[in-house]
Image 1 (cartoon, rainbow, N blue to C red):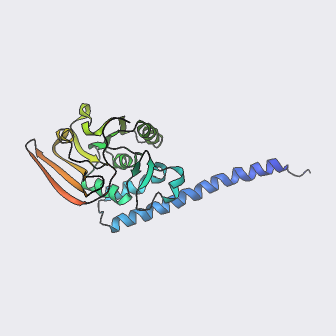
Image 2: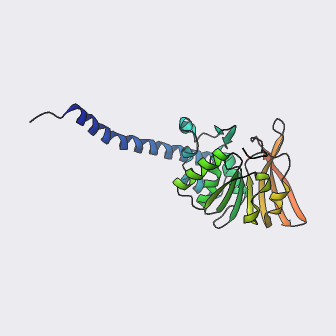
Image 3: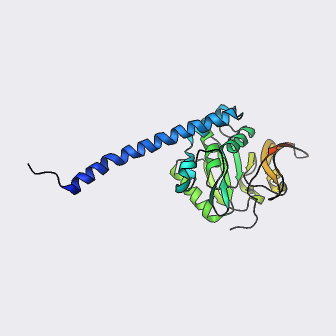
Length: 237
């Protein structure tokens, strides 16, 4: 009997090892994701739907490949074009503050990599998200489609103007710091809805603000906590 050819043996080993390595990597990410959820729970996030969504969404798919090993640390990571993916705790906190629940129609301003939209989509919300950088909007749209988030729609647009054709929204979430609360976003929020938005200067103090629209003439705001976000830009890129 002749010995196996070296090339054939190498191919067989590779064919056997690749799935094993992929499974080990998947298990490692799942452990890291579980640890991330334990951490945000320890920080005070109590909503079970939010925690379940954070546990389900593969955050490592929303960061550059070279950052995948750090995807589940509680800090923001760069995603290109001067933008970042927010730290997990802030994503969870903002989701919880919105009282996100299945069937809600939500506007997101600042798609970025699509992670926050995926978390809301995982809960069962219908998400309309706008991104000012065309390249980021395109990559997020493809990523969300590949991962099965058919309830998230991405648009390349200036978030200051919201998405009037789809208004009103049950909730609005803004993931970049605005100098002031854009009037269009308040107008597109339904009565009884709420918005969470970071407000402040790029180099100064920023606070996460909760906006509650009790009626067209009764809009109340409350500061929740100090934050640090990239600035909300104007003009398509």
